Image (cartoon, rainbow, N blue to C red; front, side, top):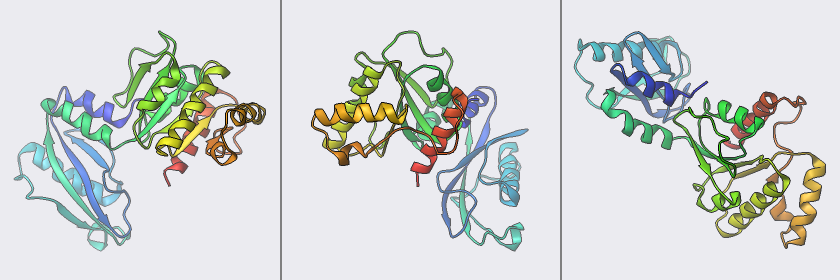
Amino acid sequence: MSGAVDQLLARLRHEDGVLVRVESTQGSAPREAGTWMAVWADGLTATIGGGQLEFQATKEARDLLAGTRAPFDGIQRYPLGPSLGQCCGGVMFLSYERIAAADAPRLQRELVAQLKPVALFGGGHVGAALARLLAALPFAVRWIDSRDGVFPDALPAQIDTEHSEPVQDAVAALAPGSRVLIMSFSHAEDLDIVIACLRRLRERNDLPYIGLIGSKTKWATFSHRLEARGFMAGELARITCPIGVPGITGKEPEVIAVAVAAQLLQSLG
């Protein structure tokens, strides 16, 4: 499944729409600032929270698309109370923008920039399953491997691929705030990537999550090797291994991907 950005761009090639964005909120609200949906003449892409608010926003966007109402003057305020049949009690502030094919490059930059960066090292079975899943979640994925020909030809807009040899050299150029997932085809590469991440933490301390696929035994072996290279216990504690939320025991690639994606979402706070 491709992500919402990819779906928007695909549909925008053939028809105009209206982009509805949540600019800000006050109090309890169904979605946060930065959330968006695209409204088409006969459909929606993404959601701003559903319910009567989304129904009303969709109607107003379609009126704008059909030319039966004038463009909005600035940001619109929607109290989430009895008038909308919702009891959240907060307020949402929405903007409306008519969009066409010419807007696609700008929208791709803007909407992908809102996503949280993830660096995924490894194009194997688990990496591929995880990439497919992350494309439907609020992440921009940089998918990295040292091997040629491992990535699919067609990928969602929020996934970029990179061939890096040696693979650990890619760590230095990761976006600040990247969450790193390490699952290469070899333990030697995994160790090199972990070392590069630990060195970056020493220099910049800007990788909030570093996850390494593997067992407790693998991590015990890695820990001894890393300690021999001068890394301290507090530094090693920054590495999550095994990865994935506890309690999910299946080893199928798709099952592991779900557990890892859930842990990534937890790391967002």
